[in-house]
Structure formats: structure tokens, C-alpha cells
Length: 144
Image (cartoon, rainbow, N blue to C red; front, side):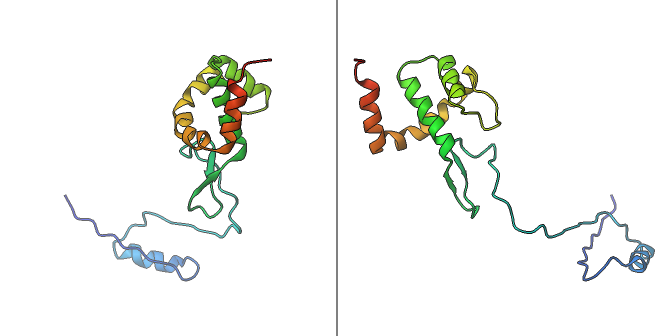
């Protein structure tokens, strides 16, 4: 098998057709062009599929920060599941209150079920908060 030699040149000005002809005459083949342009200010980073539900990439792109609407949906899910509601009822409540999945779809029993690992991850933060103490009293007190 023949050896292959590669060369990369950085352009300091416009592409010169004569330079391309000379290099090709020396036995080189053009195999790629790379283009770049400035697009101005970078927009707020979009949520990615691998970003946990309830969090978003911070503007500095170095850490994750809380996504308030998704966090509210997680807390509502937790409340409803603690009250022993079926997944279908939890999905119905989320949809009625205007919450949507990350892709903007309506919640279903399956999508709520798929959130269980995330609820387990976030539960210690919610359970240790002062807010949870108040919520727990409200959820466990008998109906009057």
C-alpha cells in the first residue's frame, strides 16, 4: 500500500487559483476546504438531550443551572406520585397546568414513567429543602 503525505496550509488572504495549479502540478490533490465566518454574539445555549430535565446550560457554558419551569414540573410530578396517583393521572395534571416535555409534546404515562430516574436524582435536593417540609405537611395531612 502506498504511503500518503498530507499538508495543511492556512490562508492569509483570498484563495489563489495559481497556487492551487502549482500545488496540483507538484502531485498534490485538493481533498478538503474549510470555511469560517463570524456570526456575532452567541445566542443563549439550547437545551440538549443529555442535559438533565430541570437543568439547562448556563450562559457561560461552563456549568448547569436550574431551569425553573422544568423544576416546577418535576416537583408537581413528585407531589402527584407521592399521593399515589397513576402515571396517566400525573400526565393529565401536567398537561392541564401547561407543562410540556422538553420537545414540546404533551405528557403521557410513558413519558412520566421515563422521568422516574430523574426524579430519584433530584429528590434529595427537594426533600432537604424548607419548601419540601411545608409541602409534605400539606400532602400528608388528612383532608378536612
